[in-house]
Length: 561
Image: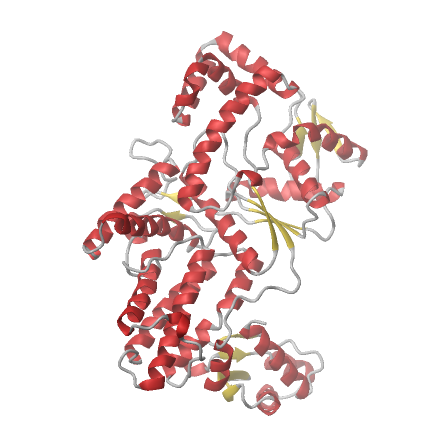
C-alpha cells in the first residue's frame, strides 16, 4: 500500500477511536514543512455532525493516532481550527525505504487504450506528438499490474483512399520510391479536383474497395504498408510501444457496420432524417448520424463497432481514448449511444481523455515557416541536431557514438517531456529554448540530475547495487527527500486513475530539486563511515526513482552529460 493510503487507514482508525463512527478524513501532503509531512482535515466536518468542538476532536484524534502506533510519527499536533499535522519518524521512513519497489495492484483492471490513431493518407504531423500521453499511460498501468491492451485505431478507410489508390495505380512502378506522403496526397488531390475522369474513377475505386475487389485491395494494401512504414519509423524514434500487433484499423470494422445500424434500429434508436439514419438524444442538440443518405458510414459507426468489440471480445473494465479536445462532443455522443444501445457492459468505464493543441509563437496552431504542416519526423530530427550542439557545448569530452547517444536521448526526451509535463487539457506554445533548457521542469534538467548522481558514485568508487542497508533519516533535508521518495507509488496510482501524466513530471521535478537541496545541505562523499554509506543509499534511491519515472514516460536516461 502506498504511504498516503497506509497513513489514511491509520488516521481513519484514529477518528473511529475518537468517537467518529463513519469518518471521512482527508489526508494530503502538507503544504509547507512547518505543517509536518501530511495533514488530516476531517475534524471540522465530523465535529459539526457530532456538535462538538473541532479542536477538541482533532486533539482526541491526534492522541489516538499516537497511542495506536507511537513509532510512526515523530510528532502529531493540532493546528488551526482542527487540522492534524503528522511528522513521520526517521525510523519509520528508514524502514519504508527498505523496499521502494513499484507495488502491483491486487485488483488489476483490463484496460484498453486507444491512442495515436494517425490518418494513413498522410505522414504523422506535430499534433501526433500528443499521442505520447497514451503511451505513458500504457507504461504506467503496465507497471502497476493492470492488463493493458493497446489499440492503434488508424484511419485506413473512406472516400479519400479511392483517390489515393487510383493515383497509386497510375504510378505503381514508382511505389517503392514513395517517401513523401504529403506530396503524394497533394498530387492526388490536385488531380481529383482538376480532372473529372480521374475523380469519377476515384469514386468507383471507393466502391470497388468497399466491395472487396482484389485488384483494388492489392493497391490499397500497398499504400497502407508504405504509410505504416512512416509511422513505424516515428514510433521507433519516439520510443512508442505500439507495434503492428496493436493495429485496430477502421477497415477492421467494415463488415460490422451494417450490423451496428441494424441493432440500433432494433433498439428503437434510429430515425431517418433527409435520407440519413440518425440517433437523436435528448441531451444533445445535434443527432448522431450513423449512415449517410448514399449508404456510407461515419466515424461514429465504426467507433460504436469498436466499443462493442472492446467490451465483448476484450472484456474491458476501462476504455481510454486519447484524442484532440475538438472531438469531445463526438465522444460524449457516441458514448451515450453505446450505452443506450447496450453495446458496452454497464460496468465498463468509457473515458475520453482530451488533449489541447500545440501552438506556435503566434499562439496559433504550430506550422512551418511557410505555413505548412510540421512533419513529426522532421521535428524529431531537428530536436536531435539542436541537442547535439548543446551537449557538445556542455561537455566537449563527449565524442563519437556516446555523444550521438546522449544527443538523441536529450533531444527526443526534451520534446516528449515538454508535451507530457503540461496538463493534457491545456494548449501550449512549442518553444525550443525552453524545452532544451538545463534549468526548470525539463527533461534535460532531470537527465542531468540523474547523470550527476551517477558521477557521485564514480567518484566514490562504489556501485549502488552494493548498498543494501536502508538509509538512516536524521537531518531535515534527509527527511524531506525520504518522504518524497515514498510518494512515488501514490503519484503513479493517481496518474493511473486520472490519466494525467503531468503529475508524474511534476513529482520528478520536485524530486530532482529536493535532491539538489539535500546534496548541498548534507555532505555525502566527505561524510564519515556509516553516514557516508547511508547518504549514498539516498542518492541511489533518488537515481533509481528518477530512472524509473522517466522510463515510464518513455524518456531515456544517460550516465554522463
